[in-house]
Image (cartoon, rainbow, N blue to C red):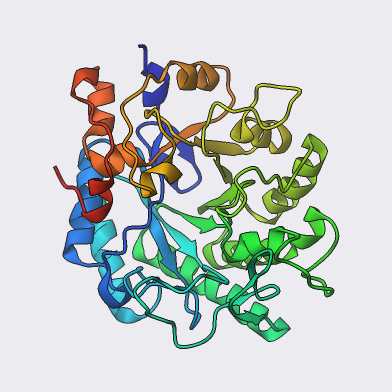
Length: 368
């Protein structure tokens, strides 16, 4: 297996990385009261030491009272949490790595199994997390304006702390995605609409404010998905034309890289081509893209949360698509969560040493 194409450098604005492999964001819930600990810093620095090109943090929430449903999800606001993130990026840079935080607002959520609740009700475009499930407030225009500003403040802090890039979480049924989806956005004002392009207004305004705060030379990523945890087969954009009408306004607002989440990267997005989501996004926008979805494993990641294990699998199809120019970067989640040296082992052709993935890796910060 020739992996040379995975180990070419990549540069875009503020982002300069030694290879094309991205550690995908994965929720860890090891930050008590929202503050990343020294153990969190060690966890990420071990991935930098293991030759990950770009580390994207677990989702870290913005300064809104109900942006999180979990007391141990990290915050990206407040002196104590930001000091924790300063420690993280300092340690990652000391190991020669590059990193960006994934900036997040969960939107309308199920209550956490622990029983913990935020200080204010959950908020979303129409109070819905999925069809028939309401568990919070419909956002007012002031709520929306304040949330956009909070995304901007988090972005400014990311740049100030020395991060190399940042990612806006716009996927997987969370707040921004709740605005995209017609089933959860039933608004009749300028943040609603019958078309996906109309329902993208909130995301566009978030991106514009983030771009205003970080300037033109800071690399900006957004993570998007068609599927939802409550609707695996959902397609926000059902045709290439709808996809183009969705993505190009986001690109025009300031997105440099589209992180295109799929459950399985090899599955075609539309019937007329074998291009996946990232391939179509690159073709339609001309922007750089990250592909992701069961890279290097034979099982998909949602099954992992149900306790299913996965074994290592070939990267040949991934490399074929990359060499064809379908995407620029490759997001890898569970293999790197379970093994900080996964990238280094691939680089050195030590494939016999690759580990599979078991649910036990979810319950700890693996550092060796």
